[in-house]
Image (tube, rainbow, N blue to C red; front, top):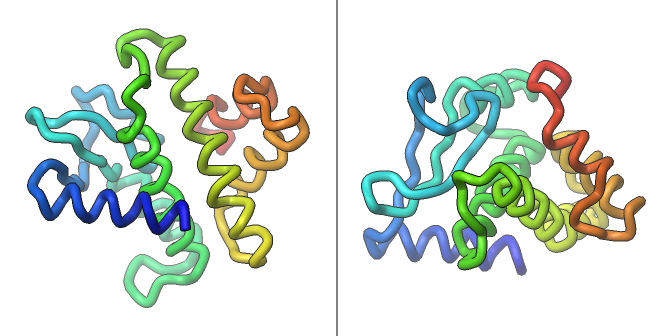
Length: 163
């Protein structure tokens, strides 16, 4: 239900012209981390989700297919990424993206919200997903679902080569 609402919101925003989804082949010269699967923000005055093509291709290749029909895990990973970015975009109190502490707090908030509302229901249904979602969910549970969980920080802010 939560995931469906977020995906429907993305679709409605895109149809109304207030939103766009972009595929970025190169993130050089942007503030998008090239190791991120997706990022969200404002592009040309319009809200956007940016899909980082090289990272997206690595994820697809690592899970077996780069063309449809995608595996359930690939579909779940993509959906989780979109939902995560929608959670960011719908937060009117995300803070100042130029401030590192605000960005970290917002990232932790979004991960916790997605973990509670999407990852856990998918786990109950025994749905496959990338191990990072499972690790983050386990860490949040171990911390009692406290947003500023040191274990979660170490997972989501780990160097790219350790992910």
